[in-house]
Picture (cartoon, rainbow, N blue to C red):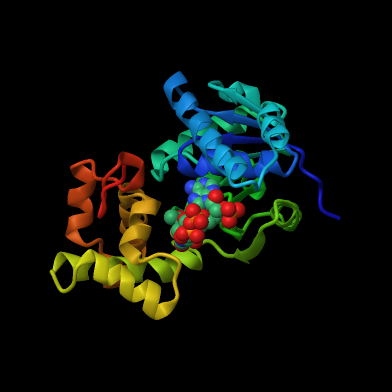
Length: 285
Ligand code: CAA
């Protein structure tokens, strides 16, 4: 019988963390959402406001339910506030040293049976687990962008994750209205391992002036029935996040499919990060 998790924490309130906090609160869980600075916290809160306001304006969410969502989220800038959480999901930027630092600190703050999950898309969950004194309680819980909309959660088990922890997290994913797939710990898991070779190829087509960005995107939307073309999707994911994912997968597999197209790094350096910075392959108002 899976343990019902009701008190949860989210660390990092960027696009993914804020979306995950919203999903958890919508499902009735009590959420402590942590960011380092007041500005980052306000930005995270802003993401949740924007997303829930949009749902209200589309008639998909009652204003009273939106208020209830906010009542269930405690915004905090202290990891110490996660002391009583049963599960914490880490969603800080995709860099091992940052994530390892959060895991080491959470390990000291949280109770020994608290499950520590990471939303990493490509880093090693095993490597993160061993910075804690509880590797068997560490797991991957990988959501997709936008988290309130995309149905999939990849549950990543390492060679030491306890089966009961996998069961608890699978049960939670289902309670959130998601569909879970459970896999072992390798870079990219299932979806990104298949998706990013394609995205990278689309970028190099664009970089080599083989076709315009509009034509590349139209071909995949209208010819293959995808909801979004690859360059628009790169902008949604974030150029910096896409770079980190490709780079990690490339370093792990040495598969040239994943060697980041040079323009991705250049865009990242120039601050063209996609939707979140207002400009990527496209420009956003
Ligand atoms: N936050 C919350 N809700 C959002 C949203 C957001 N950022 N963007 C869209 N929505 C909601 C809308 O409110 C709308 O909800 P209702 O149907 O309940 O009214 C619904 O999504 C559809 O939105 P739109 O009508 O505005 O636009 P659309 O039909 O073009 O859908 C989309 C937008 C859902 C983003 C769709 O284009 C899509 O599915 N794109 C592909 C996204 C994708 O592949 N994501 C995975 C990226 S890879 C990843 O995330 C892994 C990783 O590790 C990087």
